[in-house]
Amino acid sequence: MRILISGASIAGPVLAYWLTRSGFDVTVVERAPALRKTGGHAVDLFRPAMEISERMGVLPRIEEHATGTTVLSAYRPWAVKPARIDYLKLIGAFSDRHVEIMRDDLSEIYYDASRDGAEYVFGDQITGIDDDGGVSFEHGTRRRFDLIVGADGLHSGVRRIVFGDDVPERFLGGYLSVVSVPKPLALVGEMDGYFDPDRVAMIYTADHLDDARAVFMFRPTQPLDYDHRDTARQQAQLRAAFSGMSAQVDSWLEEVEHTPAFYFDAITQLELTGWSRGRVTLVGDAGYCPGPAVGGSTSLAVYGAYVLAGEIATAAGDYASAFAAYETTMMPSVVGSRSLARANAKTLVPGSRWGVRALVGVARAVSVLPLGVTQALARLNRKGVRLYDTMPLPDYPAVTART
Image 1 (tube, rainbow, N blue to C red):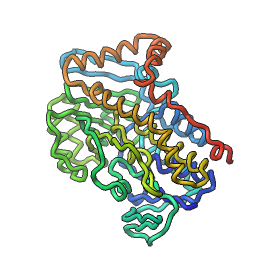
Image 2 (tube, rainbow, N blue to C red; image 1 turned 30 degrees about the vertical axis):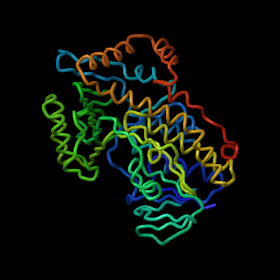
Image 3 (cartoon, one colour; image 1 turned 180 degrees about the horizontal axis):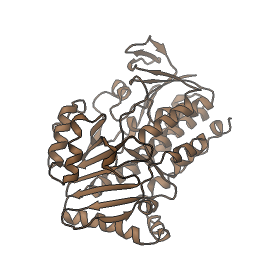
Image 4 (tube, helix red, strand yellow; image 1 turned 90 degrees about the vertical axis):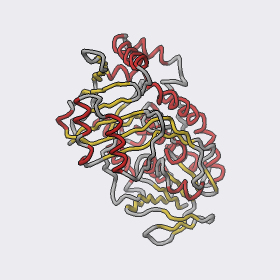
């Protein structure tokens, strides 16, 4: 059976790895001319994604590329000194098994794990899909596949082709930007965060990085006149939102005009009730993005790719039953992640000084209390901060039994 995957970021390579283990003929097409090195932000892998990575044999390499952040210094304009927060204990309250890693590093690790078994085609993209599996490409010759999977992110081209432009989504009220800035602006192991009502700016780096990453999240009073393809306008909107926040933040903004890597997008949640049509399905942000930076979308993408591969292998290529089982298995976790993301979008970017005080106060309390106490309290809320640690990880003998 020939399977085409669109997208070589996170979900695509993970899916390719598990499908090739089951003997499927896999091709991955990626619009970018090479693996993306866009200066992306740090992402979180929680317990299920960690275990999947361990089964893939790549966990040691992932842990070697961890960001290594241990301290968060939280600055507030009305406070003389920053609040020093134990970042490891803060994350530890959410997950018993976790790693923070740069998205580009993670993508490369998964690609390296899958590239020997799958065909990768860079610099091309899908332009048309027929009911019988015929696929047209922007540059390559037309080919036929038994299954087509869109793993091409929030602005998925496969989803647009198959589902059209009228896809239910929810704007969570905020925007996210990541900017590559000179490494000396940050300290290895420490994250500086500046908190104001409706806007948060942070900076961090890691030993193995050549730069630092400044991350901006903000909630304007009205949605922006926003185009995800218009970088110059995005940069102007970012500067307008954060100018004057602090001298340090202003110095980060000075790098925006000539940064080598810039990301800006609305924090938007997809609300599709199903991700499959005919012989086409979606995985990761292409199908069920809970919201960038607020919904654990990277762990959900890894989890979804593993589940999809397992169901395809179990169904021996019967894609109708495989896709149905995939959606049934994933739906509780997707619905839970949507709910958590909606809450996080408001909590992580408070709308008032009281909200900022509460956010920083809770983080400081976590730093002071013993880790075992905070973890025990967090475990009482399986649908909240512990959601991603408690997603059930199915065992698929048709996949995992192979060597």
